[in-house]
Image 1 (tube, rainbow, N blue to C red):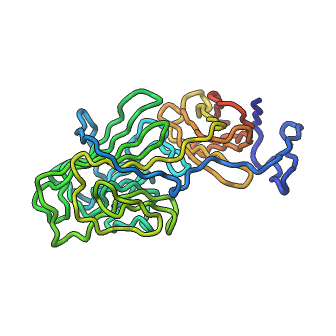
Image 2 (image 1 turned 60 degrees about the vertical axis):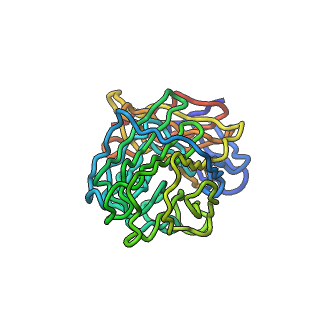
Image 3 (image 1 turned 180 degrees about the vertical axis):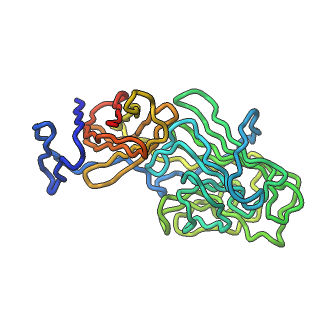
Length: 341
């Protein structure tokens, strides 16, 4: 059963106890239990190390440097090409920096020189090799390959100097995001240049959540063939090149069998798809996840608990939308929002 309502959020009474009534077009709905959103804590990600192959991108798009330079610089948010769920939130863009990490915060207005997975800013962050690198000899590029629902987004740092005073390229590496499984993967290739040990303090390799502190990051203790990932102790002093083809995987737990998805389109008042609108899905406890509409106005939420009720609202600078309350038992692919004006 699907139950829609176009009334504003403030027309509803927030649940006070385990069972309460909310007016929706004069119909009472009983919330029998607290609503829950299927989110993945960083500590629930499973780390694994394997041996693979580093394959340089062909026909990739070079990221545009918007702040700083090849030594310490940030790039504009680049499109992933699909909805990627990370740490319970849905993202469509990623903002890399020259220093071997990338933030899901878009746009990234500055670079992060301090490689601190535990407390670093602009979180959440993926960090295949977070160090004071220099891309003067190489490039940062990206590409999305494959077909839905198994597309792969690859972000590549090619021919990086390891340290701002390195004399020649020492390392190349890629960060890959996998559609549907939402796995994060790092792959490496050694270059001929040496690590400048006189100026480097060492690198961090891992992932972070949106908040700081213990339990909100996973940090590898070395760059070998079988490192361990810690959520309480960060290693930020790695000065060894990962082997050619060395691959590190961070895999979230699979969604429960009872999970569902909600998708649709955000439309202007004259019926055109609205891009970059903020779509917020909220449960009765105030927990929220967000996504943005793509250039054609489409949005999508995945891994939601079936049988639950959610409030979906749209934030746009130019248009006003009514929120909708929806009870979901099955996948929904046509939950559209049209601007009032």
